[in-house]
Image 1 (cartoon, rainbow, N blue to C red):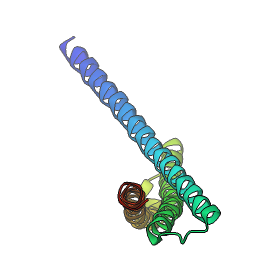
Image 2: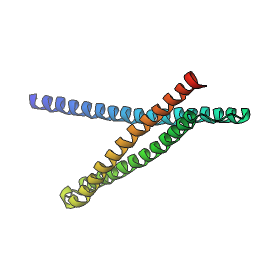
Image 3: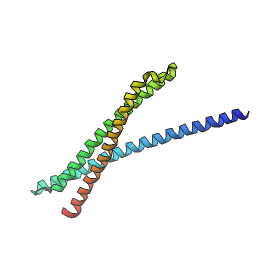
Image 4: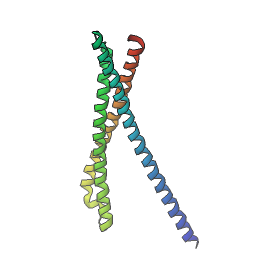
Length: 160
């Protein structure tokens, strides 16, 4: 009876940890999506402000200050960088899915996972590379967006 109770407690704890792990992963995924959405929305709004400012300068026959052009360029590059970040993240997920498919098939057919060792290693290597690229591009897009917004703010507070 005691052994069954311990097994039940162990199983309950394991399931609880799995559920927590799943919820944390979903929260992490949601947060990442929100950051990407905010980056695109904020950069897009900044580009709109820059274009409206360019339009204003053009209607007044004034020379456009370079700061507004730099701001627009930084914001556009932030969006493009974010796009490539999304692409590299999709490559990570593809390779991870491929590995999990191998694991699933091996589990279902009672085969040894080591039979696919080279394939798994190849995809794990791809995951490692694409994760580094994604991390670099994500951070770069945030920095570019921030720099573009700072330039817009500096322009409107001190130059316009």
